[in-house]
Figure 1: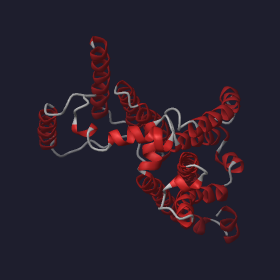
Figure 2 (figure 1 turned 90 degrees about the vertical axis):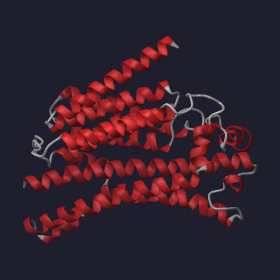
Figure 3 (figure 1 turned 180 degrees about the vertical axis):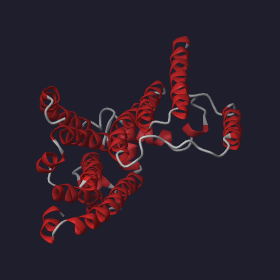
Figure 4 (figure 1 turned 135 degrees about the horizontal axis):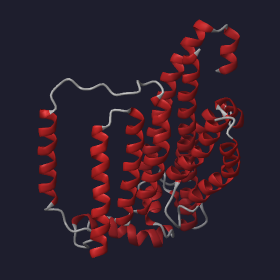
Length: 142
Length: 192
């Protein structure tokens, strides 16, 4: 697929809008359908598309493997961390009321952070799985 | 009412024909693609039930990313499924009996959207009221998912994380075992 100009150019055009749409779904989840799970998958699909068209090595250069693995764990830590911070501030685990100046703004901050954690974990798990399968293939061919 | 019935009949017919095609096909790539199509029709069905968030998830996860991952995994499978030798009579019979029981039970279900249904009596009214007052978010699904049921979503995230790490560990082990055989040590460190 590396030499097909239609695929290459359309991937280059589509890459940024896909990520933009993912971010929209991520942060618009409070007001419309969407949230961390869907947004994570959409963002991951942009990187997977890139890897499919330009090759797995180019994909790894764009989004290095160690960054991928760190972010994969960081999503879960962020989610749990929000809960622990609210515990330290004197509320219950994952009760967001205390995070902001008013209970409502606390809830907004909490939900935003928690959904971001979900999105990070989901997108990076998907990218990592795709990379693992694709690299496995290459070694098998040798 | 009539249009809703028509849409539902249309979707169910497509779903049924995809399911029958899925049973008949023995080529793995067609199985993957048909599963993806099935997910897409299921997403449309969720939209007719006004469950937009679920439909969104089904379309992006079921029809989108899982198809790509199946295709990536498909490279290690034989191109065609093996014909089964054992008799198909007993599995078919058990499927028909189970399906019959489920259809029979479905007559006792309350009508969709009925306010007096038990599921709308328990805790849902509190969530619907509280989502506006306590949390101030228009999308009730998000407030239930991330705040009222934050523990469950935390569990889900950890499940996704654990599943991903487990698959990575399995594949990584085989990768490095093969590398050890074919390549000198320096390259392992570079790639790891």
